[in-house]
Amino acid sequence: MSSFDQRSHRQTDGAVAMNHLGGNSRPMAGDIGTVLTLTVQNIARALRVARCSISLLSEDGSEVYLAATADGGPVQPAARFVLGRGVAGIVAQTGQPICIGETSTDERFVGLGGEVISSIMSAPLVSPGGVLGTVNVSSSLPNAFHEEDLRMLEVLAMQAGLTIHQARAYHEAASRRDELEEALHSIGYGIVFFDANAHPVFINPAARMMLGLDDRGAPVSLPLVLPSAHPLAVIAQEVIASEQQMTFDDVCWRSETRSVDRFFQVSASVVRKPFVGIAGVVAVLRETTSQKEIEQARSNFVSVVSHDMRTPLNSIKGFVDIILMGKTGPLNAVQKDFLGTVKAETTHLQELIDDLLEFTRLDSPRLSLDIQLVSVGQIIAEVLGRFDVLASEKGLVLSSQVSPDLPMIPADSLRLQQVLDNLVSNAIKFTPSGGLIDIGATELEAEVVVCVRDTGIGVAPEDQPRIFESFYQADRDASRVHRGFGLGLAICKNIVERHGGRIWVESELGNGSRFYFTLPKAASC
Image 1: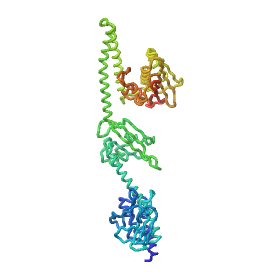
Image 2: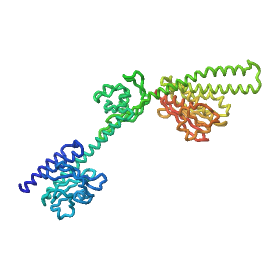
Image 3: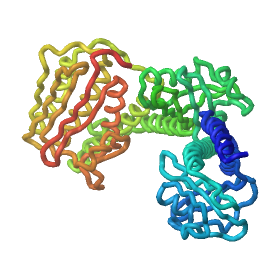
């Protein structure tokens, strides 16, 4: 066969090889070694040569090493070249192909022993990320390759580079997917994936246990074991509709395998894909049943102890009152003073117990609000009337600034009075004589904003983020004048949030405080 005929056949086979390498948009299956072997064998068949190999750049990019040969045999461990040395090293460094007809007279060629190589050509494996390595073709005959062969090799190498790049990306993605699946299966949190229609497509073992499902349910059966009416599916639908990350506390359901209610905190967010939009929802489940049981036990304990303490306290206070009235005989000044102290401390202890009981009631999920249309201005006037005498005795001025056109709002009147009572009482406690306490109320878009302002001692910056926490006290000194459990503001926060509002404080030490809370003009509870 003439050299022209050989080149014609090579061009035809090259076109077939290119189609085989690039015609399938999906990456080649198998491990990277298999992909390299198949690629180099396709190139060898296209060029009708026996000796063809692929060299790849090392991870640090300092050298190239022999990675695969057309005969599929083991590679030589010594077949490595520092970048810039040897034909493969030079091509990998420059990104330019090389064709050498007489290796014996070309200093660029560096032999490794073994097979006789008289002519060689090499082209770079180019990918979107740069040069991956080289494709090398050699022959024991001198001048075995021509310029057309080098151009064909360069084109085939370019296509091979894309194939290897895709295969690497595919296997890296598969490896990350396997690692992710392993992590999802071993993690202690429940993980549930939903598709864009809020149908569950994956439930990890932890979530299956939380949901009371066995591990035999295949993905196709998941909508059956987790129907659209299930609280989790409803959450997925809500998150898809809002397109936002959302957290749901105290999500409750009862599984078929357990006859008790189970509580969970569920954090869910949408999963987006480029050019697609929302692809689904991922929900993370954390069971809070044990925590709820502990909280309930604590609440029951506080309630029982508080109730049991009220009876003897009432008896003590009653007998002290009888003695102070002189029913048991005359009292001297010292006895009256001591009994007066006992009565005051008993009253204070009763107030603490009342706070504990109130906090326990408000902490119960069964508590409901008596929502009616109420006038915030009228409630403020009633609160000011109750505290007028106490404020005057301390030398304080009470005032109010209420917008005349303030609308009626849906709220529980008694609970709203309780919030203002706590805030005004605190203001009186912590405002020295000669100070001012003002209650303001105004309309702001969809809310009514109420502010209790005083000229008292203020709240330290480090205390402000925690001042509404249960049992937290800004004044932690053992000798503090105003004693309590630190529940007043926590009760205020609970009531305001149950109305769908917010509460916060703005204050500077020595410059008074401003306690704000909002109430929605439309019912949200």
